[in-house]
Length: 481
Image 1: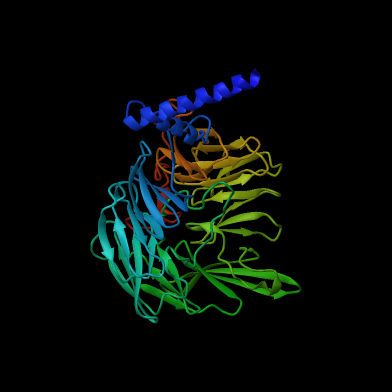
Image 2: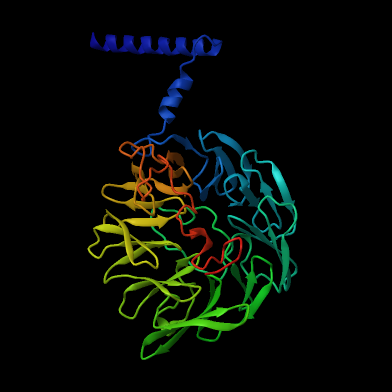
């Protein structure tokens, strides 16, 4: 009897399925799209929830906020999405992509590997603004785009463009651009950024172009003035030297092996005159391997500063322009992030992160953090990635005021003036600063006056010409202090 009832239930279910298929086929009622949407629906990647969340075609290689768009580079394509809604604006095939310019002046530069040339696209429409058919390498900055084209391997021209410009601002001759310098942003002789898990290295977007750049060509370094295109120096390093261009100076870093130890000396040279302007001994810039003190890496740092280790094992931050010690850590303190203005440091007891102003020896703020927490600095926010519980926290780098606090295992992919993009796998989402529960709706800006509710500090909003560099070498008037 029970067997008969079971057979009857199966018959009824089969007839019901046939009826549903018939209704769907005739257009009377179709439940399948809704069912598929329910199956395919993504879990929120953070708590509180993001403003929007979208699933993209593949794991992103890079994500950049460009004005009112989010540019997502994938392995074989690039796409742009609306910052407000996450809706796709355009998509096209590309092997590499990078953003130049900032805010409303931003553009997207795309190209194919091992194929000369590139295109400059409007980030909102995807329309080609300019096309080049000869360049072999491109460098993208917040206020400049550089490209290199070579008639012969030893006959190359470097050109500088306004990101949205139609004619080059200047051109310079280089005897080659070196092996491996192709596609977007190949490595120059500068600094290496500090990195941390769950915080993308390019989370801040394009940087302002440094006053000087060092191009490695056939074992030599050609120092180019980015304001005029003048090639100021063509220097071959000594046998125990590594050359790096930082903060408007050519750094000659010497590492000598003696008594089973490496002994270091750093000299800052004015490339315009060849004159040595400062010298320090005993600071290890972590450029050398232990065996034989061979220097194979650029020093760590950011913009105009470099990071070193003093003979007593305390970490230090040096001004690349004049060699000043801008910060010296206490015993067992660990530097997590640095720029021209601030240093984020893990405390000796590994229970907190401390923000210090460079050159002032002043603690700006302190907040609890685990021993494995990472941090990064951007013009708009300091971002901290913590574990157990897994969180991403964005704060004002000057005051420590919370801009966003998320319970999430996602990565911080890009930070902009009003929020940040986070992502996990193929899922990306946008977090608006000040939109999380518990944030101060009318926070103080640090001097008693109310700040802009929920907004991050503007890059130059620090009262000290922070974007000009420590010696104002990036200021439009070119003056220095």
